[in-house]
Image 1 (cartoon, one colour):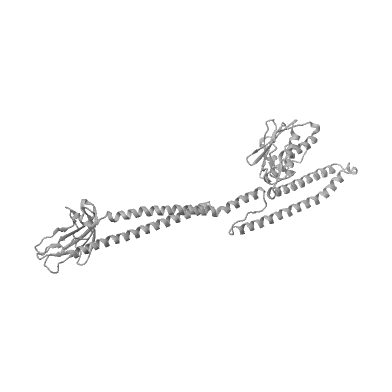
Image 2: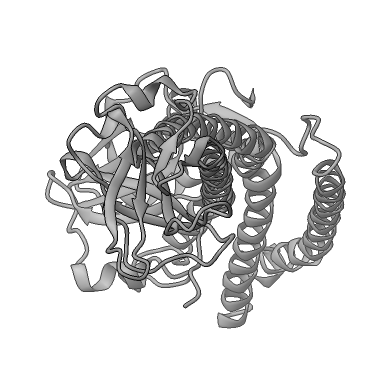
Length: 469
């Protein structure tokens, strides 16, 4: 089954951890196996040395009785239950039955070694694990010896040692090796973690710079990166520069086209407004209306192109309060005869819009113009910040808009009342511009009884970007 990990850091760490555990495990097994084999070889070599010494010191007297000419050199054979033992058994021959323990070490005291029934052939040495004194397991080697000078029956020579003499060093080594290898594994894991985090640190910096690019706080990647990452950064910077040039050319071409179209539109508008054409009838009214609509469409698309470039490429910032106050002065002159009461309930001086001041003024102007058309005399404005977003509410006490019609009114050219003056572009323009900056426009019920237009826009900070007037 294939397992996919979404994090490169997880892949590297889990892969390294698996490799370290596998390597340490195999190394530990090999070390313990080699040490156990070496210890066992050394253990049986010592037993064989004692067996050879026993065979060399064993003699047969004139009566054919086995006797020990001199004691074995290891003093443990003389200490009771020392863990090291030897024994001589007489094997049966003719009319002589076998006798166990005709000679034995003092370390056996009143105990005897009981070997298996099988006998080794002449010259062979057998190994066995049997019960020793106090039923403790011992490791035993045995050999059969014949007397060449007397007709004495053959004897079985045995040397044994407590099995713990072999098992305890193995356990001790196993514990020490596990501790040492565990410490080594922890060190390797910590080193791998440091290496992974250090190796992936440039990617974290790259992500932070990309966030700055997205927010418009810089136009290219500026930090130096390792040689493995720098070529990709250079290519991305080249793409960003080319994209900026393309957007700039597109804006220039759109502006040139708009100015080229505005000239004939102005001529047509002047012709319709000429004193000689006052009696031209409905045709002049239609031409004037369409010229005005064409101008609004051109202004809208120019603003959209400017906002798109400002949202993606520039680091411009503007304060909300001065922009709002400037729009209010225009609105008060525009609706002077209606004597509208326009109040700012809340708008801290610290609020900053991450974008062009001209775009903010256009959005606020369209919303206030819409509120001014439908208001019954009261407009209330409040602005604040929620996280990284500005929230600007414009409430009126007009008739409001039904909930099932609000989404439709955000589409360009849709109007709530065909009898009211206007082109239906205002709310659509605001929604388009807000979305270009990553915001949105919401239509809700206002506490004053009319419509609340809630505008969400990206907020800026004092220390970033440049401020536009």
